[in-house]
Amino acid sequence: MPADTIKTDLLIERYKHTGDIAVRNQIVMQYSSLVRYIAISMKNVYMKYAEVEDIINECIISLIYAIDTFEPDKNVKFETYASIRIRGSVIDFIRKQDFIPRNIRKFTKDLEVAFAQLYAEQKREPSTQELAEKLGLPEDKFRKLLGDSASAATLSFEELLYENNFEIKDNQDDEFWEAEKGVFKNELTAELAKAINSLKDKEKTVISLYYYEKLKFSEIAKVLEVTESRVCQIHSKAVLKLRFYLSDYLK
Image (cartoon, rainbow, N blue to C red):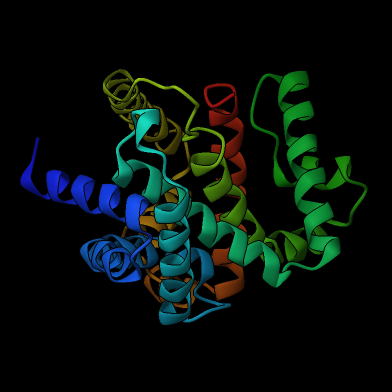
């Protein structure tokens, strides 16, 4: 067992027995780099609505909650437990801001249903025009809503990847769970790569620059020499496809 893990286990055991805030603060300091890493890695999800330092503060609160609620006898590593709780806290924080208008939320949900129905009927990816017709919208209005839904699409995609698949179960054997999670992560990476590879060239570029290079939509627009609105449209359509392609795998 790594020395740091042993140290954490001892500190947590001491905190559970004593409730000493100084000990808890030691654990918080030990995992400060994990907090910052998660906050920065999820930056594109919240960058329009919160500063990094605000999110770090939320993550620290979540880390403290994880320390207080962690149960060593459940046989799950603290780092695993804390990471899941911290990522979940970022998503919860964004939800609570309620920054996505009701009509955009409805459009996003209706769009996912329409895409799935048309795909099932036609056995192929539906066009923008077909989706607009299915939703009973003029194509220009549909494109505008598609662009406006970029933020909702980003959050929706993060929820799909993190919330539905990294749950801690009671009495889960840690060694087995860690191995299972490792296999799942590898499979998910492969499935995600296949899903991204099925996208059109511009969609691949937008996904790569946004999620991997962490560029803003405005910066991607300059790279592609298109408007920011057009980048938002491409992003929303790409995420819609990725959610559809991954939905069966992630059930």
